Length: 133
Image (cartoon, rainbow, N blue to C red; front, side, top):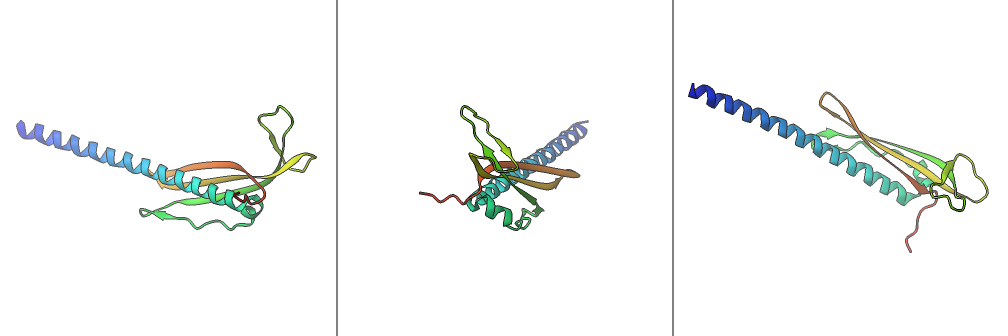
């Protein structure tokens, strides 16, 4: 009986460690994907919207033996700000008083647990390259 209890406790402990390892790995993958999205948004913001639209997609990074697929979409738009408006809209054509912008969407996908997971981020960036002062 004692051997049965020891075996049962050992089996339970091993399965708990496997679950913990899988959870830790999944969280690490989400963190890597979030960092990739953030880094790509920063890179494109530094280029400016017009140059970002011409930029070829970056290669898919392989981190810890896992390939993360990165897709980027850059859409030009014009932002119209009216007095008192705190959430300006982005329109697809120039209007008087509008600012030329670009809507940037970055999505990172990776295989996990028999399916695909994704992390995405988006930003409105200036169409021209920002020059630090």
